[in-house]
Image 1 (cartoon, rainbow, N blue to C red):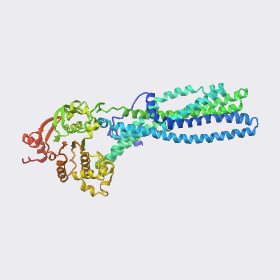
Image 2: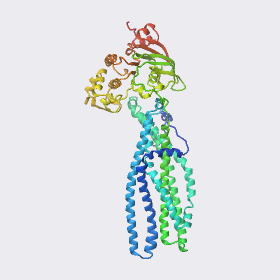
Image 3: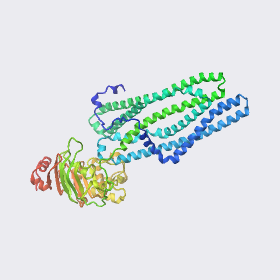
Image 4: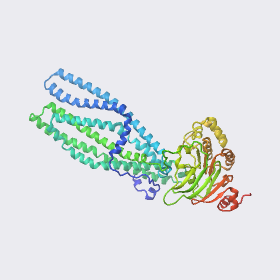
Length: 607
């Protein structure tokens, strides 16, 4: 652990998670009520049942000290009435049993309430995150998002399982005890609780520090999870470049930061309980001194004194527990701020309320003076004008960073143009519902993603209602059937996360089958054949001629042999279209496309 403190700052700066920032806001009760709004659906069931058990438990606990002090000691022992004392003992025993049963039911119902609320929050958060635009994920690591959905929501468990109802129980208990204490002896009650204002003053000073400490701990935990996620995903690269030692050094650093933040938060939270204990000690000292004085002057009966002592202990107990709930509340506030920060995030790609649902897209795509920038420093597209007629195969070529993938992203409306418009069949994409648009577009990427599940489930991912026969036919058409049959369980073979049991080429073939089974009107292939060997590519080219027929196809490829049959090729450079035409036309022009082909093949192709 000491080594973590001595890490080279350059090692600690190796990764930077800029999206995770400390949220410095005052304690917001409006936000806490928003969080408690998740309890509302269960008010008439679990909350009502829990409240009844809490009320019963509180009443029983308030009755018992009076039975012990005033009746058992004051009337039973002092008057030496054995039968009366036996009756009181039986009543107290029955009350304890009732309290025990009520406690069991309360714990059961509260646990169920807590799990239901956490389930609802996590579901809402995940649903909202899924609807956010790509720019949200561009700025955040998967690990930091994971922390919000899992850890931050999970940290609310104690608040909803114990905190809220226990707070209610302790408040009822505190009010009841104070009323009884003043009934037994107003003078002694005022004497023992005079220290309370000092305690509340100190707790107010601690409040912000404790909340910020827990929020800082969540930030460091997010950074730790982000690094863990990145390290596991990139383990092959780490091992290939023998960076295990450096990676462990960085992990040691972020792990220590997380540990140190947790230690600081718990240290500050722990300051509250001793303060309550100190107040309790002072109150007990006052009770003994002043109580004896009142008894000696016949101003207080012994039985009432015993009851008062019981109630005084009960007075400090809820205050102490309220301190624990207070810490839970601060932790919940830190977590809820992070949860609602995501909940309040608005997608940049907004869907209008009166958006048109297109059920039968033809695939006629037009870019009109389209500009786009991922940030303010550099434009990705500069006034692009292009047309893709329905059923055409269009190719986009150019150096890395020329704007090819940006055009594909705008067609799928993962982003909106910063100027100009993108239209399909004459409709501006901003006027079309996202679901109806994307349901008719299939995208195949170079780095394809295979989900955990069977081969069949992965092929059907874009069209779950497809039959097994349709999925198999799609696999056959794309040339994936032959390797799937050789797997241990064929189409029912389980693949782990990211499809690690498959080769890169096999995963790519599966993504082709998945896209084609969805029967889209528009297909976007973004370097989709880059990971496939030449022999497999020849097989796919034959299948694509049939499968792409009648669909608008957008092909992005550095391997120019895959696009020579495209109806039209657009050559891009730094966000501008510098050439357009089919393969033969561009080769005759001997411009940038000609130079790209020459650079790849070294010789001019025969015409």
